[in-house]
Image 1 (cartoon, helix red, strand yellow):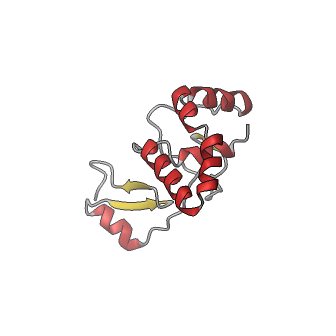
Image 2 (tube, one colour):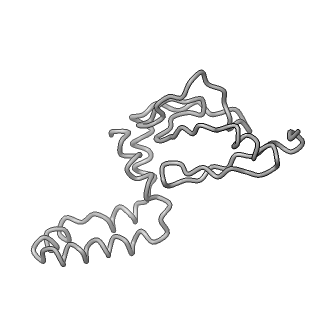
Length: 139
């Protein structure tokens, strides 16, 4: 089992309408080619995979991918010497990760945080991270 599998499914696991999207894909295939749709339906494993859930796949990943050391409790910020590639299951201070981004803050950004506002950062066009000053840490 290739760790890239997890990277591929990670992007869709949070979808609440996965079944509807699957049906839409099959409909699009029908528009492209009714014959291809027949083949896709004959080979489609989506329903059986949805019924068995993620646990069989996650177990395969656990057997073929080393365990990540758990991050210390309540520690989601780490100091590192320099940014690094945190994709493809890379080992990080928080365990294995499959994506990351780098943001450079200007003095204006720091001033915004000092004034009590927060910055919203768009991570990989999928996640939002907020930066703010700790309560009582503002000057």
